Image (tube, rainbow, N blue to C red; front, side, top):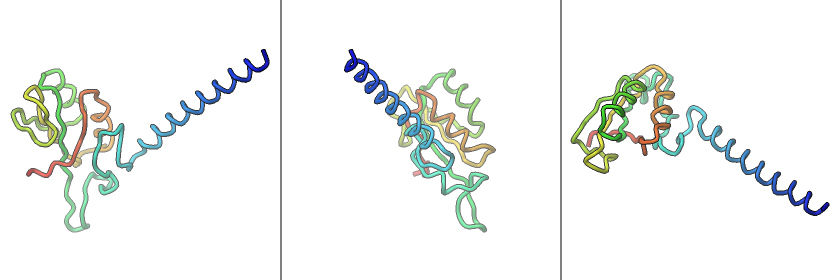
Amino acid sequence: MFLRQRLFIFIFLVCLAFCLGLACHYFCANEPGNMIRVGKIEFDLDQLDADGLRGPPDGKVALSYEFAIPDTQECKAQVIGIDKTVQFMPGSRGRTVKGDDECLCIGSTQQKNFRQVLYSLAELSYVERIIVCDFE
């Protein structure tokens, strides 16, 4: 009986440690300025200042980013509710569109609360990745 209780406590503590580790990883990885949020934002937010601009003081520019969403009015409405800078490019593939049923989206970091906008986009289940848009 005593051995069974110890085994239960041991398993409980291992599970607790595992859950705490996951929680710590999630919250630590999602601090503002970190490179990846939920594994979807694939560029370094530290290169941007508080206004969402990067570059030398006399030549700062905004960063454009791209991502793909299902080509439906519902998804487009949800995205525009999060990101007021987003432009939809149906028919364009960019580097994130995989199929004909997806729509390319391009946004800009030159907006208020750009970090939170990116984090909210990354939390959408249908957004797989957000990358820098180089307009190639």
